[in-house]
Length: 204
Image (cartoon, rainbow, N blue to C red; front, side, top):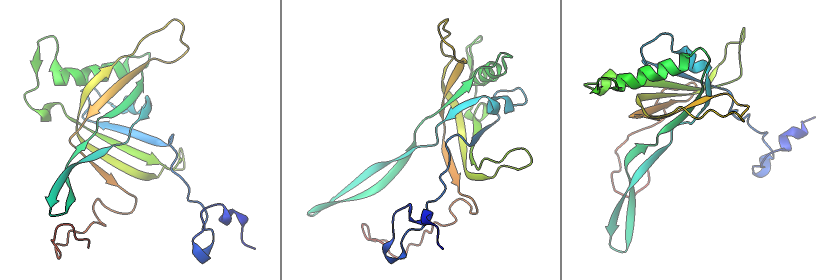
């Protein structure tokens, strides 16, 4: 006898219900930083992550006015800044690493900046996990590799006698590029660039 749970979704014509797909859960994720600060290990940051915003991209518009209409094309893209909140630990590990990264970008004591972006930029790895832990190794359901990162802003937050919360440090991260890797396929594996029909505005 078929389970009635198959009917708990949107029907598809004569096929009926197909069952609901398991969603990714927002609290199952991991953030790793590479070349962040100068101390080791940087896994102290991974332990203290509170929340992280996935990359957000926007394409500029290119409008081509023609005869009685306008053709729209996608122009250059812009990655929005990422926010990441960290719990500030009593041992000062998070504060030290964040301070080191800021000093790599600009030596505030000597007013001396890094000579090139390569001197201070870091890489961020964001993974959506399946919930595995311990003997059950977690599986990455989605991976983002975020390149050319630097701290655009750091907010050390406030302290409050009337609060009952852990102190946090808010990071605003700017970056050059991000690559998304779905499970079981490489970046761009399903994307073709066939130029058989190059007429503007014509679908393939």
